[in-house]
Image (cartoon, rainbow, N blue to C red; front, side):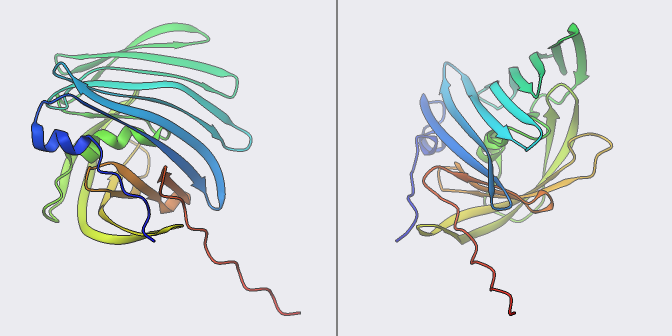
Length: 244
């Protein structure tokens, strides 16, 4: 029995250009065998704008993260217009409200010490992501990546409130991926980016259905995996018992 597939209204976007549509999703995130986070999000297109918005919770043992809001608004050409992130990490609350114009990301960052402006240079078509969670922020990349050749594709990713970094994507083709309920044929690409100008690059594998919806994300270096609702993680086989 194959895992549930859903040809969402995002497919209508590819066929109908600027027609209005909406879609939603839920990611369950694991570190090793332990569920550590959930994310709920929605994507909509209307009035010449694309809106990605959602929330999430993560429990990293000693650190709990509550993402009250993460939203990005772009125009029809995926050029960012505005973004907002509001989260609590442990006891620390943070909010960042951003406007994009004239090649700049103009942040108003609020913490316990007050509100401070921060301005960063960005490309007009930059992706807007976060350094770690939420993973659903990469949905706009999924909508833009080319799925017809294996040539490296270069993007600019603005890590919200920090800096712009390059992101490299390579499409690997379509392949069967196994889930708890069976296999699904999905589009696979790799993603490599550094969350800051001095950090080591992060390598991720991303699988999309034909509507370009995020279905599975794997970050091997951090032992992290994320699964779309309806595509449950298949637990690895139990380790053989040690002989006495």
